[in-house]
Length: 476
Image (cartoon, rainbow, N blue to C red; front, side):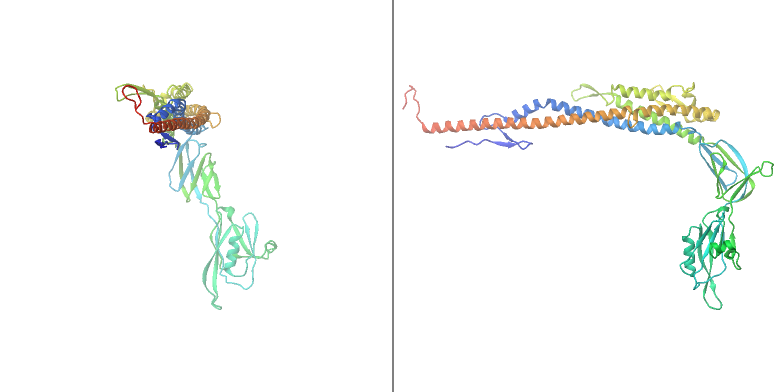
């Protein structure tokens, strides 16, 4: 018995598909249509996932912007944050830096001396076959014993440099001994620190010998020399008056001259040097402008993502679509609250008075010229207003972006959880639809197979009974 074949193909899932060779039906199309019809819930879920992911990305981006603004505004709202100064000196040998604890003003002083480290050179010496002991005595009387590995000059230098005495040594060749021809050296000894507190002396002998007065002082030996004495930097305020006051420092940087001011001197000046401290209007203006720009950038971003746009399709139909924040009450309220931090009067003063302007289109801009005029006219009042506004901005930005309780933070986390749940449902639908497709294909394959068998059987019967019927109905 002959059989007629059943034409098959393979779908994307690897299942067998039938073309309906026996039945004449397009079974592949029938299965696809059925699956498409049953996929409506999955398609709706997938569309929601896409929409939610778009919103999640927008929320996370906005949250990052709010977090950055919160940091910026918090810094601006700190005590004395706008207390920024620049300094100038009547002599380039004197410079200064300031902190927010400084105050505007000027002061004159003479520079009596600059800080210096002690430098001494010993008398000539040569390598010895005996191992000496040395003692370095600091400015406070502290004694440090130096025990070289041998009597060689290099071992003596190494022992000094490795000690805790705060003195460095180098050996400098100093000719030859006229009698023995041995190489002679001098040791240059330098305090590690500048200032009078870095002064030292060095003795050949143990600490006990020094205490007993039997050790020899290398720095007072014949041939030794003092190159530079240890000294503090010293300035005198109101020199020549009854109020004259001298201030010293072990370094050339004096941090105790004026509150919030660090002064650095580089040479002595008998002529009084005048140091002036004035508000740094450029830095203050730039910081105020940056705060306004950061706020407006967020407001503009929200407006763009909330806008409804219209477009015309190929058929000439006008369609409208919204952004991820269109109709979003949370975002709209947050935008209003942030806008009001700069738009509403603070301490009874209008922001416009210091150059923070509200335009007809609802945007906020900064007039630096107007701001600088206000700063010059009322420095403390302008800075106080800025600090108050910065505090309000910081509060609103933190309310949105706080890592734990921020409105945007918690909403983004909740939405992310929702998306995870939706993706699980999509995956479940994908599995179910794949099983449904396999079942349909199997059913149609079975139908085609049965039809094929019936057709084969009919053909066989026809071959077994080839009799024909004549026109009168009689059998030949």
